Image (cartoon, rainbow over the protein chains, first blue to last red):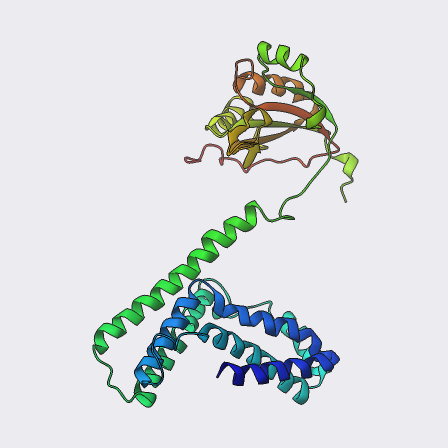
Length: 219
Length: 122
């Protein structure tokens, strides 16, 4: 399965590298593969893979998780490359540039889902709901099983969505905003004014100590 | 149009203080005792070379919270206020901090509407 996925990934990469307008997307596409190697995603992907492999009853359950992260990493690459090739083939470059220009101008009055906190809530829903729908479809269509404890599962999904939304809001309000103000280069300004006088308290013993000290290494 | 030279000549007094509430006390005192409302306080991170600590075999500079108070004053009152602030924040006693004065090319006049200073709250 991994080799079968690797062939189109490499083939699409070779094709993209031969087209000058697609070469720029190549790095982005391969970087997208790394989204499945995060500390949260890896256990999730592994448990999903092992769970599905066990449920379908094919192969050794302990070995069926092997290579799943690689497999999951290849699909984003194929997806991004496929989308880029499709757009490059169907839409002329001028239209894309024009759309990008008008899009950035139209962003002057963002909709509710583009501003805080609407954006974070939409992001939270987008992170959880597609996965839940996918798992539900796997259970119903592939495995043909009934959903047991539906009430409990719904309660869990609601709590997860709420948690994700609050986590996103915390990131925006707490981390991003505070971090951006404190440590980001370029968030401050400089000015020069002539210094006329300055004063502070310097203890006498420190003055004596400083008189005999070499400051060559501190300049 | 008002030209730059039409604005009054001004000085800027900057005061770096430890974050222990002295800045707020200073702003209040400047407002009530000297009538100065062109003063601001900002929180910054300070690094003192003398405050280096030995940590994991290396001398590390630890960051700590400091307050930077800037006061824009008329040129003719600058020396008086410099001295006032110096004694107000106890720079004549052992304390970490620094006060310095520089000149500004100009500063726009700033005044609050009548009655604002008497309002309750800070």
